Each structure stands twice: as C-alpha cells, then as structure tokens.
Length: 381
Image 1: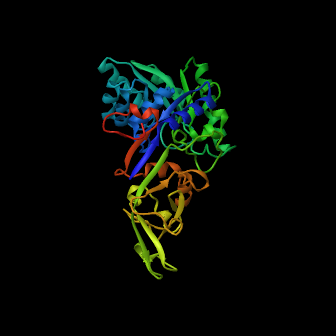
Image 2: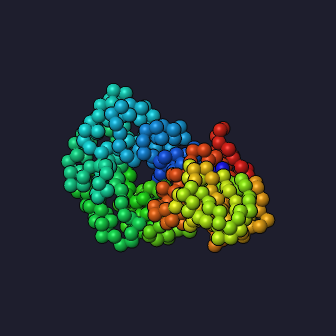
Image 3: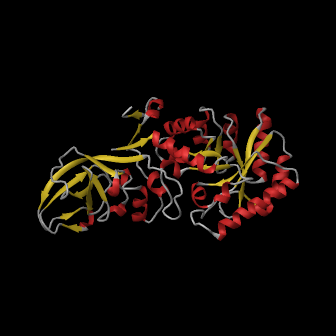
C-alpha cells in the first residue's frame, strides 16, 4: 500500500498561501513527520518554494530539520533535559513562563551561545503559554536575562475556523493590546504571529500589520477544516492507494466481515482490498464509504478490518486481482477527499492524515521528487 505525495502540488499550494498573506512570512508547520507524510522530502520542497522557516512540536523533530539551513521553531514547550540539545542545534525555542526563560538563559551562558526565543502567549487556547494578563512583567523580566535573543512573540487560535467568532476577535484584541503595551515599554519583536491555516482562510485581521508572519500546516496538503471558509484554491497533494487482492462471486445471504454487519441481498461480485484501519482507513467507512477501482465507486461492504476491506464490485465487472485501488484521491465528482473521510468519522482532516499507518509506503512524485534523500522512494520522476 502506498501514499503518493505530489511535491509539485505541495509547492503550488505554498505559493498560493504566500500570495494570500503577503507580505507576511510563511512558517511551514511540519509536526509529527509532516503529519505523517514524510518530513524530509516535504521540507526540501517547501524550502525551494520559499518557506521562511519550519515549525515543529518537539526537539527530536527540530533537530532532524536543522541541517536544512532554515530556522526551526518549536511551538510547544521544553523539558529541562531537552534544552541543551535544542540550544546546541540552534533551534528557536519557546518561552512559556519565566522559569523556562531562566533555564534557557543559564544553559545558553554555559554553552557560550545566544538562544533565539519566541514568547508563547495564552490568549484563550488554555494549553500552554504565558497568560496575556501576566505577559508584560514576565517578558520584561525575561529580557533582562543574559544570552537571550527575544526574536518573536506568538499565540494560537482554537476556533479560527468559525468566521466572525467573538472568541477569536477577543484573542486578536488581547494580543494586539499586549503588543501595544510592550511597545510602550520599549520592547519590540522582529516576528509577531498568530494566524494558523484556519485563520488564513477565515480571519484576515490575523495576518495584517503589526503581525508579520503566519503558520500553516494542513493547508499545505490541500486540506481544510470541514467547518469554515476555503478562500484559496488549494489541491490535495496525496493519494492513498492499494491493490485488489481477491474477486469472488458470493451467494445471496452471505454475511460480510466481523460482526456480520452486512448480508448480501443477492448473489454479488465482491472484492477484497489490501487495506484496513491499520493503514489509516477509518472504521467509520464500514457500510458507508467507498473506494475507486478503474475510476468507479465501489461501496464498502461490512466492517473495515485491520488489514482488509471488502467492497461491492457490481460497477466494475471487468476488474481483476491486482488492479489499482484508490482509497483517497481520484478525479472529478467521485474523488474521495480527506474531508469526506473526516465527516464520516466525525473528526477533522488532521486526524485522517496523521492516521495513515506506518507500514504504508511513502512515495513522492513531481519534479521536486528527485531531491528526496536516500531511503525515500520516488516514483514518476
């Protein structure tokens, strides 16, 4: 089974996003191995396309990208034992409280380095960061510490997919008010960012002056939150495909799969494909979703299992064992989108992409695929 990533489409999506937020810098968010799609080839393609820097969740991810030559920003927080390695690799570090600033400063002094830091402000996410009401004093105290370069300040939106959200507007006011108060104290930051992919589509104020950078992740792959606007014409970069493993003529009354949740109403031609929930197919496709065989929809019969899924072959009588099966992707009105799977599962597109299993081979196509490193398979180059 393969997930095929079109790096040319990835670059085209990035260029459209950059144009939409100009003159803001675009930070490419590549957490969790680029949402499971393979961070190195994706990062290289985005670097060529003009990404200003990368952002990840933790130190191991950051170190892997540091050698590419662009700044790499940790968006989350740091444990004490992670600080020395992060500093040694020149990673842009988050400051989520005064104590962390003090520990980063002390380690920077010990290593004889200057630590580049961004202050993470909690304006309503409720997860990490300095509360906006306390931020002035924490930031001012932090900036008196030695060996710290306070390059940036940022916050994060929990509901930016809702256009006109009163909550989001309140976050923007809180953050901009904080910037104004800090300016009055003579504290300035070179980078000021709050917009994520949802905000780029729904909240234009989140990437206007004095804000000068945005962070985008899911939109790079041509995916959107299932709630909210889609102001950019982005295309999906991925196709999830497998093969047809078996084709059988089964009698009326035959039950299909675990739990016997489907009974054949008549004698039917039934196929089994080599893909299941271990590969990323949501269990919610059971008796509801479909795959494409020879470009035609084949409904899922019964429950999706770990390794196999059974489908109705009525629409493709000529199909045979070994045929290509498109689980995600395709063209035209029958294309299977990440958002469609998210709706069926009652989740969001991030969950769908990140759930593609580890045994699924990652492959890359397009003119940029030739830049992929050894150990990464490229096709169609």
